[in-house]
Image 1 (cartoon, rainbow, N blue to C red):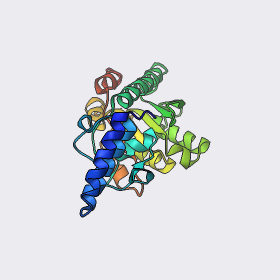
Image 2: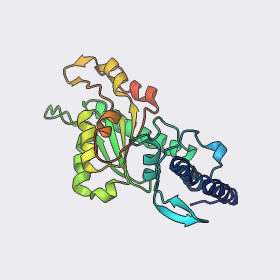
Image 3: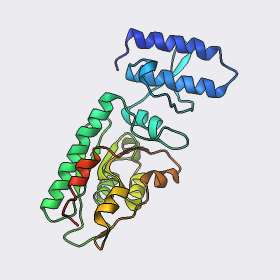
Image 4: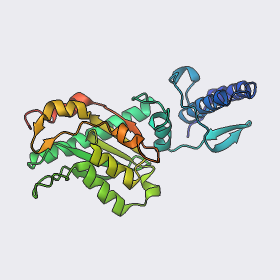
Length: 250
């Protein structure tokens, strides 16, 4: 983890400011997050978003300030999870670049599915270290399985192969936003983060009420928000590329 002198100085400065505002838990929590975010990503306060998640995090001490010990997946949960966490796709450049690279792998899987006669959907499971662990095409054929969505099948495979504590630091990349069924599968498998390309709303505009894909336009964030653990969500990203996969398919 890169920690520049500038980042440490910023943390020290904010630590002093935090100690002067002990009357407000909100101030303390907000600063704690800002410090941990800057320290982990090695950026200055001016480079981070003005919106911050107000919550206390466990971590280690540096000059009396507790820093969030984060994996990329956990850092993402801070930014985009439930209960007041930031929504949208504001990301450090490195993470955004990795998300785009992994999403294009999911898009290639989706294109492969279409070439074999299936629906143009694909999903990829990526580990905490950025390694692609599994790929999954849509599995509607050969059995005409209406539940054979790429994400659902991938989550079933992942749940059999990895324990929840491993999946908690994994990311599911899906060529389209997970439907209610697929979001539920990700939740039950224990996935920590979901990144999707094409939104359900835009997919519905493309598929209409197609008998093989009567799109269920329920945001996956709504599904995850009903759960009892946090699942980070980023998306849509590279949405035009995702939409192009469906041209002429429905």
